[in-house]
Picture: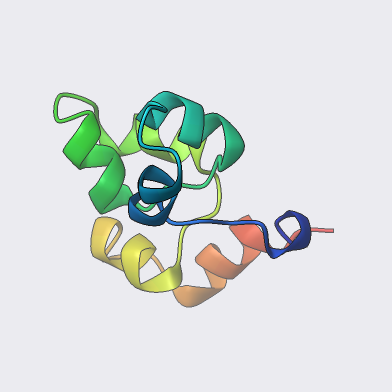
Length: 81
């Protein structure tokens, strides 16, 4: 599952290029946001809320959140079909 045409631009870089744009605008362009960054912008939101917005989670992060789950479970979640 490729995220469209390698057009992902990190927020810091986007903000340099578009200083007047908001984080929300950037997020609309780049639906995947690393959890740390999301949490920085939405400190009161939960990991579950982030996960709904960002269904792909790197294995390291998944394991940190779900220490008792197996790599197989993670793999099933992200490599269906």
